[in-house]
Length: 142
Image (tube, rainbow, N blue to C red; front, side):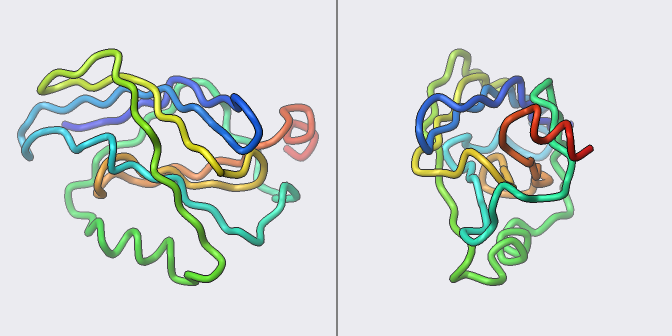
């Protein structure tokens, strides 16, 4: 079993987000993927006027899906390349063992409002799509 937990997502500066994570696995499908391969993907033409409810900044879990083709998943996300952008995060580990990785990813030059998708590792985990922006604005839409 493999899982990635998002502990917190916060805006730390203009066009900069930090994401606290914990990834664990039992090595039944090999070692944990490299957190450094994680990406944030967004539509460069999307604004903060998305009608989707905001994703809570509480703990979020997404599970490794062993049958997902990581290349196909990324291609599906990037099917309109001129509009979509992606950024890799800088990783600062607080704990790194064979079966557990915890730390903070910092994404720079990224939107702090609108919809973004996060994919942990080099692929295979389900993507997490979030709507970012002021809490009171997003709460009013739900």
